Image 1: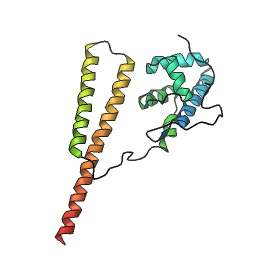
Image 2: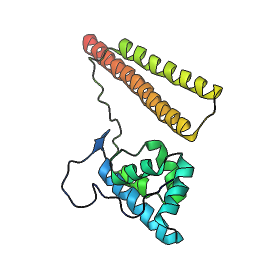
Image 3: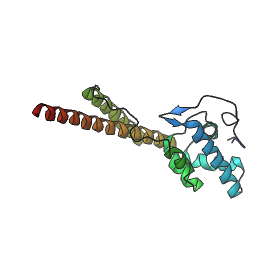
Image 4: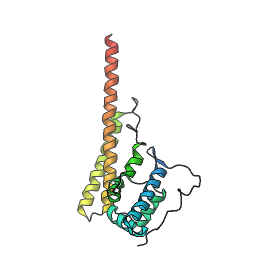
Length: 183
């Protein structure tokens, strides 16, 4: 397995480019922090870059090419990798990089959303997730499978929270209409 050593060439080299935004997060900034963390830890632990990459690959279940692509900003860093990376690096730098960028409620909640239709879509996502879990249980489970399931579960949880928030918003609208009609 070939690991990439040194600073990845791409988005961090000073060449102007468009920022990569995923879910409102500046992925280029996150990639720079990730790359800086790799460099810092390799230096602190006296490891060659390739050794650290191999170590991280074993922990997160990704290939050296995937790690390179995350470090270079070519691919967005999956949120499920942030906790094991922070633990391995003994640092919260990746979390700190996200802290200022995360919004409390990233999905707009409007009264014109069909809650019933949205609930059915969420239910389908839940069923798909559970089918994936059942399929994974029947075969050999790899770390990459677990990471994919974690990401799908996080998406479902966010959708469920959005659904509940929609119901709260609808309740508030109805309560305001009742108060107005009672006056």
